[in-house]
Length: 109
Length: 120
Image 1 (spheres, chains in turn brown, blue):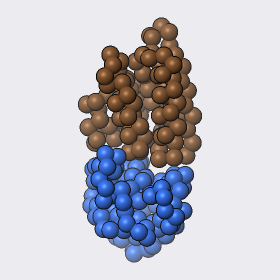
Image 2 (tube, one colour; image 1 turned 60 degrees about the vertical axis):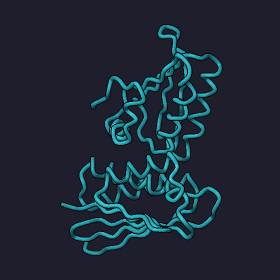
Image 3 (tube, chains in turn cyan, purple; image 1 turned 90 degrees about the vertical axis):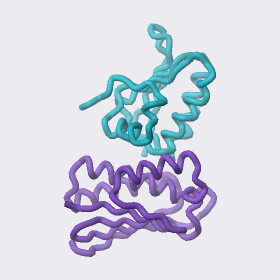
Image 4 (spheres, helix red, strand yellow; image 1 turned 135 degrees about the vertical axis):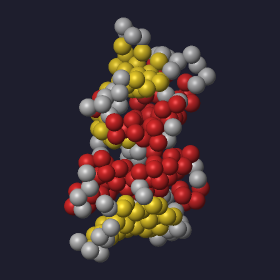
């Protein structure tokens, strides 16, 4: 039920690295979104969401990612998703969101 | 385990939905689903609860699992209409897409979502 989100700026790669640890669901998705938006507004750059420790996401979590995408769609920046677990990657395939996000480095166990 | 029933009633609060996911995993394990099938059931049930969840109402959400020899049938019932299903928002579309892809049959009524997972 819980979620911890680590948000750090990576100066080498010049982007925000967002590491959600736990579950992005109806209970946690609004806080997750707020934390990412807060970081982005501090310094506008690409966003990298590292799914290594993301165990679960539901449609409200996917909705939060879509709203982040809308936030940056008129800019030069992109949202990258990395190290998604197969169960989470599957949801991006089902909902065809894999076409909207740059997904790489699938974590195939 | 023929026609056995398991019931769960949760308050209309978002933080209880994780409890339904946990319960769904346990039921899936009990009826012999494999790990991927358990994960699918858990995700579909989470989405069904999100669809049933109405932030401005207080009625509890009733979940009933019925185990048949050839299928698992889960009914998610709430008093009052399933607004999210009716309104067809972007998020509810995502939720329905996920449930329909992962489960074998899904039915929506005014106040119920019925999910069926066929057993081998």
